[in-house]
Image 1 (tube, rainbow, N blue to C red):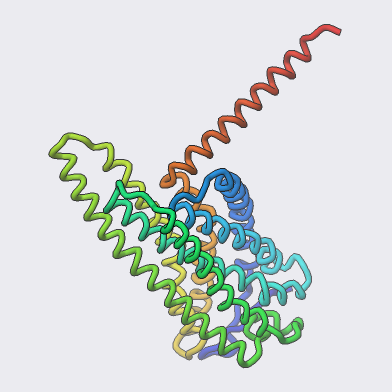
Image 2 (image 1 turned 180 degrees about the horizontal axis):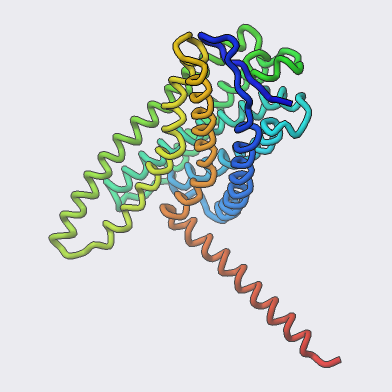
Length: 332
């Protein structure tokens, strides 16, 4: 049976066999589901052992929670796209898990922006520590971000209220009420605003960070010390993750949206834009696997706690092996 989708535009008969969506992308999502679940599960366990003593750690803890929620949506997308279950699941994906996916994506984007600001302040004022009041402010800000994004996303679930049928589940927009479509458009504009503001913050902060590191480099050249320069350079992992995961999708989304709403592209171009959008959407999911590298590279408390945990696990395994060997050699 051929799985097809229809594209509006200058060719109403434009359709394609969705074999890439049905085979390749479910495989790719399955890979990052298992890798991301292991890495973020371990990260969550480590963060439970670390007190929230700085803004940075507060923001990182919120990021790992967001990543885990995103990862938990992957099995539903995998099963739906691979057509391994009945079409009724597609209705649940449109109503719930797809909304959660985008909800957590933009929470991650917001917190990456906040983490970048924090790292800039740390670079500019390396010896200034976070006070209790500032940590409390970071916690309150984090709660407000979750409440705001949840309030923005919940109507998308509620207003996806048409009864799913075999025909209308092929396109999630067909399950929305008229006001649901309007709200969905509003949410898209808000999310675009969130991305571009975060993008601007990250670019500006890293420009300033680069200047601070260059000043530090010139100072260390004069004094003959280079250790601080090599440590601070790791902060660029944040902008690397942001540009790999989020920038391609938001640039690809512009022409893809035009292809869905205006008669400006040929059928072959529409299909190409669809696959580019799906591929870059997978890159946004890859963020859940890359964020733990940020924790390890930039958070000393996380790194120390993780290494201690791994050391204890290795030591316990060795003790168990020695005990088993001793038991085997003990005469009856």
